[in-house]
Length: 497
Image 1 (tube, one colour):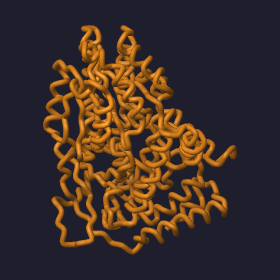
Image 2: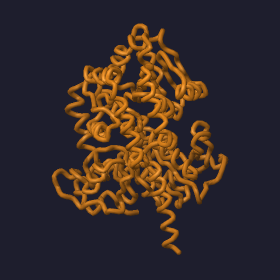
Image 3: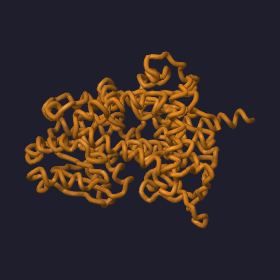
Image 4: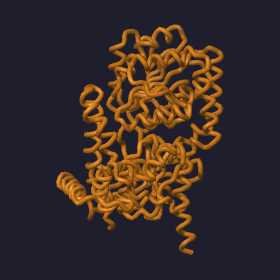
């Protein structure tokens, strides 16, 4: 096995940092075991949630070899989407990859490395996810912690090559989950860990889809083809900018890094013109403006969402505004908002844990009238995440922190970030004209709400920019990632001939 923690793209890791990486791996092995000799029984099961829409099947791992699958791997058109649940972002990007793979005629396989509790891989990921979630929650409650700890860790700590060296060592333990998967099926990883583990496991064709717009060594998976969503990100990654302080580093080889554009689902991209025209028509007809609030994981930033809801309540009563609130799979967040905001319950219709009802509402909203507040909660993670995708099409404004949703083709109002790396998503969106600047506090957030509602051209300009962006391929990133992955396999066959 190549030791990818000693040398990263020709840049030597110091002995101190290498020893730290070895200690990290040893520590996780002591806590969770080392799977290097494990051989998990691998089967395919139809995904009951994404399967009907996106043709997705799940890769499942079992210790019992008597477990039967629903189908065999398609060695010609199969493509693995390797992901983890860490918040909603990596799942959402994975759905975009699966959607575009399906649209291009391929068979997507969903492989969530954080869903097999019997493996050391899942135990390691879960432990790190718990730490990240705790840090996120504390950062929203303590400005001092956010300024002195959380922002620097997310902005500079994850940026350093030494961090990647430790991750690469940990990925050696994670690689066992790929052991019994055919090595010639292409893999798209929507987080570095599934990509790193795939490379260590000997998967032949690995694409590492980098999610953020701030170059960090955290996202490197040496041995894969890296893709990025922006030109700014391409330049930063190409020279590994700032990843060993002020040192000038050896750049990434040209073929290991490709600009693709934004990772967006096929059904959203192909309906851009229609959906933007509908938004402009609603604005011109002075119909209620529809705001979609996406509440993530631990319900962070709920004070901002509560302030927006309170501000919009009079307009909702006068049928000047409509509110969609997707609480994901965190019902308690919505219940707390409902209890703490007087009058919210009376204005609200709850679409809870009924996927058919959610789909029906989203279909009706594309062409029909909508009033009031509509709250959505789904216990299943797939439905919880995908509900935002469906609601996006009929929404006028998506209200979100500047994370993975920064890259989606819908007018966006950005509330305050969680982690310094996220601010670059809002900067990029504002520059290409499909989102606002990041609003650093509640007064500036409400100012943007007023602009969307009162200004005659603010929303329309964003819609026109989205259509223009589509015409030059800015939202084609997920299609391109799939094509790159399949092309790697094709090129290898040609070379072998």
